[in-house]
Length: 295
Image (tube, rainbow, N blue to C red):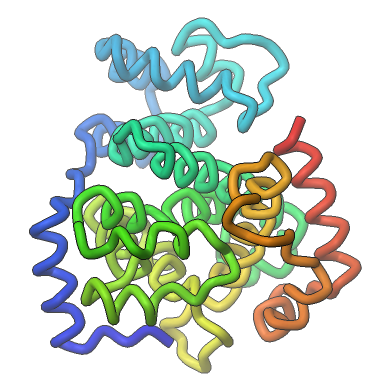
Protein backbone atom coordinates (compact mmCIF):
# COMPACT_ATOMS: atom_id res chain seq x y z
CA UNK A 1 0.00 0.00 0.00
CA UNK A 2 1.24 3.45 -0.88
CA UNK A 3 2.13 5.26 2.34
CA UNK A 4 2.50 9.00 2.56
CA UNK A 5 5.54 9.53 4.75
CA UNK A 6 6.44 13.11 5.57
CA UNK A 7 9.51 12.85 3.36
CA UNK A 8 7.60 11.40 0.39
CA UNK A 9 4.88 13.99 0.71
CA UNK A 10 7.44 16.81 0.89
CA UNK A 11 9.16 15.49 -2.27
CA UNK A 12 5.81 15.32 -4.05
CA UNK A 13 4.90 18.87 -3.02
CA UNK A 14 8.26 20.13 -4.28
CA UNK A 15 7.63 18.45 -7.63
CA UNK A 16 4.06 19.74 -7.74
CA UNK A 17 5.44 23.25 -7.51
CA UNK A 18 7.61 22.49 -10.54
CA UNK A 19 4.94 20.83 -12.67
CA UNK A 20 2.28 23.35 -11.58
CA UNK A 21 -0.87 21.26 -11.23
CA UNK A 22 -3.69 23.04 -13.10
CA UNK A 23 -6.20 24.75 -10.84
CA UNK A 24 -9.74 23.49 -10.71
CA UNK A 25 -11.74 25.46 -13.29
CA UNK A 26 -14.28 27.90 -11.87
CA UNK A 27 -17.03 26.34 -13.97
CA UNK A 28 -16.55 22.99 -12.22
CA UNK A 29 -16.87 24.68 -8.83
CA UNK A 30 -19.99 26.56 -9.92
CA UNK A 31 -21.64 23.46 -11.37
CA UNK A 32 -20.78 21.39 -8.28
CA UNK A 33 -22.38 24.04 -6.08
CA UNK A 34 -25.53 24.17 -8.20
CA UNK A 35 -25.84 20.36 -8.31
CA UNK A 36 -25.90 20.26 -4.50
CA UNK A 37 -29.06 22.38 -4.44
CA UNK A 38 -32.29 20.59 -3.56
CA UNK A 39 -33.67 21.58 -6.95
CA UNK A 40 -30.82 22.33 -9.38
CA UNK A 41 -31.64 25.06 -11.89
CA UNK A 42 -31.12 23.54 -15.36
CA UNK A 43 -31.48 26.93 -17.03
CA UNK A 44 -28.78 28.43 -14.80
CA UNK A 45 -26.48 25.47 -15.43
CA UNK A 46 -26.96 25.79 -19.18
CA UNK A 47 -26.20 29.51 -18.99
CA UNK A 48 -23.06 28.92 -16.90
CA UNK A 49 -21.59 26.72 -19.62
CA UNK A 50 -23.02 28.56 -22.64
CA UNK A 51 -21.52 31.92 -21.65
CA UNK A 52 -18.07 30.47 -22.38
CA UNK A 53 -18.13 29.80 -26.12
CA UNK A 54 -14.83 27.91 -26.13
CA UNK A 55 -15.93 25.63 -23.27
CA UNK A 56 -19.30 25.03 -24.94
CA UNK A 57 -17.55 23.92 -28.11
CA UNK A 58 -15.28 21.56 -26.16
CA UNK A 59 -18.20 20.10 -24.22
CA UNK A 60 -20.13 19.43 -27.43
CA UNK A 61 -17.02 17.90 -28.97
CA UNK A 62 -16.71 15.48 -26.03
CA UNK A 63 -20.42 14.61 -26.09
CA UNK A 64 -20.31 13.83 -29.79
CA UNK A 65 -17.14 11.75 -29.52
CA UNK A 66 -17.35 7.95 -29.90
CA UNK A 67 -16.71 7.55 -26.16
CA UNK A 68 -20.22 8.74 -25.21
CA UNK A 69 -22.08 7.00 -28.01
CA UNK A 70 -25.03 9.41 -28.20
CA UNK A 71 -27.69 8.33 -30.67
CA UNK A 72 -27.74 11.61 -32.58
CA UNK A 73 -25.51 14.65 -32.88
CA UNK A 74 -25.93 17.10 -30.02
CA UNK A 75 -25.81 20.70 -31.23
CA UNK A 76 -26.46 22.83 -28.14
CA UNK A 77 -25.84 22.88 -24.40
CA UNK A 78 -29.57 22.94 -23.70
CA UNK A 79 -30.05 19.86 -25.88
CA UNK A 80 -27.17 18.15 -24.09
CA UNK A 81 -28.69 18.80 -20.66
CA UNK A 82 -32.10 17.57 -21.78
CA UNK A 83 -30.72 14.46 -23.45
CA UNK A 84 -28.12 13.43 -20.90
CA UNK A 85 -29.46 14.58 -17.55
CA UNK A 86 -27.55 16.59 -14.97
CA UNK A 87 -25.15 13.95 -13.65
CA UNK A 88 -23.99 12.85 -17.10
CA UNK A 89 -23.73 16.44 -18.27
CA UNK A 90 -21.49 17.27 -15.32
CA UNK A 91 -19.24 14.32 -16.26
CA UNK A 92 -18.89 15.74 -19.75
CA UNK A 93 -17.97 19.20 -18.47
CA UNK A 94 -15.43 17.69 -16.07
CA UNK A 95 -14.02 15.59 -18.92
CA UNK A 96 -13.70 18.62 -21.20
CA UNK A 97 -11.96 20.62 -18.47
CA UNK A 98 -9.54 17.81 -17.67
CA UNK A 99 -8.77 17.46 -21.38
CA UNK A 100 -7.75 21.12 -21.38
CA UNK A 101 -5.62 20.57 -18.29
CA UNK A 102 -3.77 17.69 -19.96
CA UNK A 103 -3.02 19.98 -22.89
CA UNK A 104 -0.09 19.48 -25.19
CA UNK A 105 0.06 18.41 -28.80
CA UNK A 106 2.58 15.57 -28.42
CA UNK A 107 1.59 12.08 -29.49
CA UNK A 108 2.04 10.84 -25.92
CA UNK A 109 -0.51 13.42 -24.71
CA UNK A 110 -3.12 12.08 -27.13
CA UNK A 111 -2.33 8.47 -26.19
CA UNK A 112 -2.75 9.20 -22.49
CA UNK A 113 -5.94 11.17 -23.04
CA UNK A 114 -7.55 8.47 -25.19
CA UNK A 115 -6.49 5.85 -22.65
CA UNK A 116 -8.01 7.87 -19.80
CA UNK A 117 -11.30 8.23 -21.66
CA UNK A 118 -11.44 4.51 -22.40
CA UNK A 119 -10.62 3.73 -18.77
CA UNK A 120 -13.41 6.06 -17.58
CA UNK A 121 -15.99 4.43 -19.86
CA UNK A 122 -14.73 0.96 -18.92
CA UNK A 123 -14.87 1.76 -15.19
CA UNK A 124 -18.45 2.94 -15.58
CA UNK A 125 -19.35 -0.27 -17.42
CA UNK A 126 -17.68 -2.43 -14.75
CA UNK A 127 -19.51 -0.53 -12.01
CA UNK A 128 -22.85 -1.18 -13.71
CA UNK A 129 -22.05 -4.89 -13.98
CA UNK A 130 -20.89 -5.09 -10.34
CA UNK A 131 -23.51 -2.67 -9.02
CA UNK A 132 -24.77 -5.01 -6.28
CA UNK A 133 -21.27 -5.44 -4.85
CA UNK A 134 -20.23 -1.80 -5.18
CA UNK A 135 -23.45 -0.34 -3.77
CA UNK A 136 -22.62 -1.95 -0.43
CA UNK A 137 -19.59 0.36 -0.26
CA UNK A 138 -21.48 3.39 -1.55
CA UNK A 139 -19.65 3.37 -4.90
CA UNK A 140 -21.68 4.77 -7.81
CA UNK A 141 -21.13 4.44 -11.54
CA UNK A 142 -20.31 8.17 -11.65
CA UNK A 143 -17.58 7.71 -9.03
CA UNK A 144 -16.17 4.80 -11.01
CA UNK A 145 -16.12 6.94 -14.17
CA UNK A 146 -14.32 9.75 -12.36
CA UNK A 147 -11.74 7.37 -10.89
CA UNK A 148 -11.03 5.93 -14.33
CA UNK A 149 -10.78 9.40 -15.86
CA UNK A 150 -8.32 10.75 -13.27
CA UNK A 151 -6.30 7.61 -12.48
CA UNK A 152 -3.36 8.40 -14.80
CA UNK A 153 -3.65 12.20 -14.73
CA UNK A 154 -0.25 12.47 -13.06
CA UNK A 155 1.54 10.96 -16.08
CA UNK A 156 1.02 13.73 -18.67
CA UNK A 157 1.90 16.32 -16.03
CA UNK A 158 5.19 14.58 -15.28
CA UNK A 159 5.90 13.79 -18.94
CA UNK A 160 5.39 17.36 -20.08
CA UNK A 161 7.00 19.25 -17.22
CA UNK A 162 9.71 17.14 -15.60
CA UNK A 163 12.75 16.51 -17.86
CA UNK A 164 14.08 13.60 -15.78
CA UNK A 165 10.81 11.75 -16.35
CA UNK A 166 11.31 11.42 -20.12
CA UNK A 167 13.04 7.98 -20.03
CA UNK A 168 9.88 6.59 -18.43
CA UNK A 169 7.47 7.61 -21.20
CA UNK A 170 7.66 4.25 -22.98
CA UNK A 171 7.25 2.36 -19.72
CA UNK A 172 4.27 4.54 -18.79
CA UNK A 173 2.54 3.52 -22.01
CA UNK A 174 2.87 -0.17 -21.16
CA UNK A 175 0.23 -1.60 -18.86
CA UNK A 176 2.52 -4.49 -17.93
CA UNK A 177 5.03 -2.29 -16.14
CA UNK A 178 5.18 -1.65 -12.42
CA UNK A 179 5.61 2.08 -12.67
CA UNK A 180 5.73 3.62 -9.18
CA UNK A 181 9.05 2.08 -8.09
CA UNK A 182 10.81 3.11 -11.31
CA UNK A 183 9.25 6.58 -11.17
CA UNK A 184 10.29 7.15 -7.58
CA UNK A 185 13.85 6.09 -8.32
CA UNK A 186 14.21 8.38 -11.33
CA UNK A 187 11.92 11.31 -10.57
CA UNK A 188 11.54 11.25 -6.79
CA UNK A 189 7.77 10.68 -6.94
CA UNK A 190 5.22 8.71 -8.96
CA UNK A 191 2.15 9.39 -11.08
CA UNK A 192 -0.19 7.82 -8.50
CA UNK A 193 0.75 10.43 -5.89
CA UNK A 194 0.77 13.35 -8.34
CA UNK A 195 -2.60 12.24 -9.74
CA UNK A 196 -3.93 11.92 -6.19
CA UNK A 197 -2.82 15.46 -5.40
CA UNK A 198 -4.32 16.83 -8.60
CA UNK A 199 -7.64 15.13 -7.92
CA UNK A 200 -7.71 16.54 -4.37
CA UNK A 201 -7.00 20.02 -5.72
CA UNK A 202 -10.02 19.59 -8.03
CA UNK A 203 -12.27 18.69 -5.05
CA UNK A 204 -12.67 15.11 -6.24
CA UNK A 205 -14.29 12.96 -3.49
CA UNK A 206 -11.81 11.47 -1.04
CA UNK A 207 -12.61 7.83 -1.89
CA UNK A 208 -11.72 8.47 -5.53
CA UNK A 209 -8.51 10.29 -4.59
CA UNK A 210 -7.45 7.29 -2.51
CA UNK A 211 -8.26 4.90 -5.36
CA UNK A 212 -6.01 6.98 -7.64
CA UNK A 213 -3.23 6.87 -5.04
CA UNK A 214 -3.42 3.08 -4.72
CA UNK A 215 -4.32 1.96 -8.23
CA UNK A 216 -0.98 0.16 -8.66
CA UNK A 217 -1.33 -1.79 -5.38
CA UNK A 218 -0.61 -5.51 -5.75
CA UNK A 219 -3.23 -6.60 -3.20
CA UNK A 220 -6.04 -5.10 -1.11
CA UNK A 221 -5.09 -3.85 2.34
CA UNK A 222 -6.91 -4.55 5.58
CA UNK A 223 -7.42 -0.86 6.19
CA UNK A 224 -10.66 1.09 6.34
CA UNK A 225 -8.87 3.87 4.45
CA UNK A 226 -8.12 1.58 1.47
CA UNK A 227 -10.99 1.63 -1.09
CA UNK A 228 -10.36 -1.92 -2.31
CA UNK A 229 -13.42 -2.24 -4.53
CA UNK A 230 -12.86 1.06 -6.32
CA UNK A 231 -9.16 0.24 -6.77
CA UNK A 232 -10.24 -3.11 -8.27
CA UNK A 233 -12.57 -1.33 -10.69
CA UNK A 234 -9.79 1.03 -11.79
CA UNK A 235 -7.32 -1.82 -12.29
CA UNK A 236 -9.74 -3.79 -14.45
CA UNK A 237 -10.78 -0.67 -16.38
CA UNK A 238 -7.10 0.16 -16.93
CA UNK A 239 -6.52 -3.32 -18.37
CA UNK A 240 -9.53 -3.13 -20.70
CA UNK A 241 -8.53 0.35 -21.86
CA UNK A 242 -5.00 -0.80 -22.66
CA UNK A 243 -6.42 -3.79 -24.53
CA UNK A 244 -8.36 -1.30 -26.66
CA UNK A 245 -5.23 0.80 -27.12
CA UNK A 246 -3.37 -2.29 -28.33
CA UNK A 247 -6.18 -3.36 -30.67
CA UNK A 248 -6.14 0.11 -32.23
CA UNK A 249 -2.37 -0.02 -32.68
CA UNK A 250 -1.71 2.76 -30.18
CA UNK A 251 0.62 0.64 -28.07
CA UNK A 252 1.50 -2.22 -30.41
CA UNK A 253 5.04 -0.90 -30.86
CA UNK A 254 5.56 -0.87 -27.08
CA UNK A 255 3.83 -4.05 -25.96
CA UNK A 256 4.93 -7.20 -27.79
CA UNK A 257 1.55 -8.86 -27.43
CA UNK A 258 -1.76 -8.09 -25.84
CA UNK A 259 -1.93 -9.21 -22.23
CA UNK A 260 -4.13 -12.32 -22.17
CA UNK A 261 -7.17 -12.19 -19.90
CA UNK A 262 -6.28 -15.45 -18.12
CA UNK A 263 -2.78 -14.24 -17.20
CA UNK A 264 -4.11 -10.85 -16.09
CA UNK A 265 -6.78 -12.45 -13.91
CA UNK A 266 -4.23 -14.72 -12.23
CA UNK A 267 -2.02 -11.75 -11.33
CA UNK A 268 -4.94 -9.65 -10.12
CA UNK A 269 -6.98 -12.36 -8.40
CA UNK A 270 -6.94 -10.63 -4.96
CA UNK A 271 -8.68 -7.57 -6.39
CA UNK A 272 -11.10 -9.57 -8.54
CA UNK A 273 -12.17 -11.44 -5.41
CA UNK A 274 -13.40 -8.22 -3.79
CA UNK A 275 -15.61 -7.64 -6.84
CA UNK A 276 -16.81 -11.28 -6.87
CA UNK A 277 -15.57 -11.63 -10.44
CA UNK A 278 -13.84 -14.62 -12.00
CA UNK A 279 -12.22 -15.36 -15.35
CA UNK A 280 -15.52 -15.96 -17.15
CA UNK A 281 -17.07 -12.71 -15.91
CA UNK A 282 -13.96 -10.67 -16.71
CA UNK A 283 -13.74 -12.17 -20.21
CA UNK A 284 -17.38 -11.31 -20.86
CA UNK A 285 -17.03 -7.79 -19.46
CA UNK A 286 -13.89 -7.16 -21.47
CA UNK A 287 -15.55 -8.29 -24.70
CA UNK A 288 -18.68 -6.19 -24.09
CA UNK A 289 -16.84 -3.01 -23.15
CA UNK A 290 -14.26 -3.33 -25.91
CA UNK A 291 -17.02 -3.79 -28.47
CA UNK A 292 -18.50 -0.46 -27.38
CA UNK A 293 -15.14 1.34 -27.27
CA UNK A 294 -14.00 0.02 -30.65
CA UNK A 295 -17.22 0.81 -32.55
